[in-house]
Image (cartoon, rainbow, N blue to C red; front, side, top):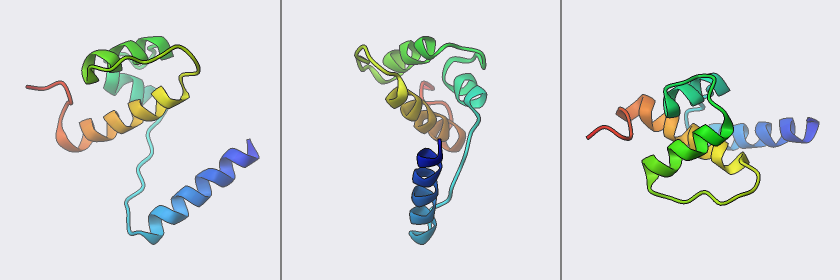
Length: 85
């Protein structure tokens, strides 16, 4: 866990140095934004992302899916829902 904290600190410091805004969302908020259900499973989030983005998420760890869901949440919060027409 300490290594993850260090990596997060380095990423945040780099963002601040570049003048970027840092935004954090809880897992529940991300799940709510992507699926409409704050208690959705990782598999449900992955399935929704596949449909929203017209991509295929391969089998394996869903850590990258978590990051993609966070990016979609940021987009939804700043630009409106991704799936809005």
